[in-house]
Length: 274
Image 1: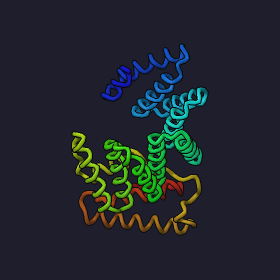
Image 2: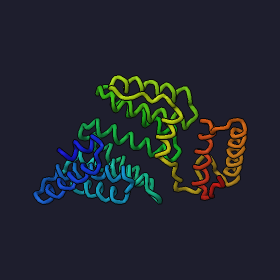
Image 3: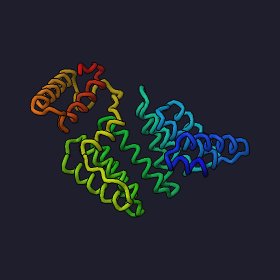
Image 4: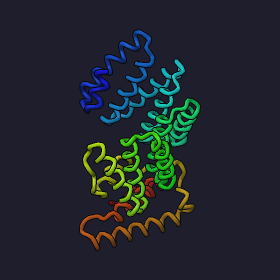
């Protein structure tokens, strides 16, 4: 409990020490529920610290413990966490990531676990957005929102609205992005949290944590031939150059074009010249 309290207060060093003790003690006495919870929190701390490999090991351990004791709620949580960290690692098989989310969502449906279900769908949406599949990501975020709404969970609703705002921003839907941000701010104010009114700053902060990752296939579906990919690359570079001439600082449009260009270059395996 001390470790969890320290974690919520943002004291990662204290939290990690207390949770490490809880992990060792619960493992020695066979308390699998406490063990799995400790592993989950330790994995989250490792992710915050950028140590994805250790986080993955902890989440994999958590998956095994939860399977062993038939803790389906914990197992769904662990599968979601494992998919989330795998999705942020290089050379990831994205089919495996989606399989983890699939299993987590199925477990949540069978065990009537709406909180876990919402978390799994939300993580799926964020991974889809990393892949540049923005429409599918938004559909997941709307589905997640539909789960949180009847649960009267304003903190989760605000977070979901911020994710939707960032996805709309990436799609170039600035009006919808602003509406989602305003709705999130209304909820945040009700919770006593500070408003976040700078749309560019909020969206870039969220999207910047989720770098667009190349798909497994040689070309994304929108570019069914190398010639079309080259044509799209030229159009994006021209658009970026024109916007840079018109604006001293990069605009939202420029940033979106850079995001699209980065996705295209990553998928086709060609380095950016920028």
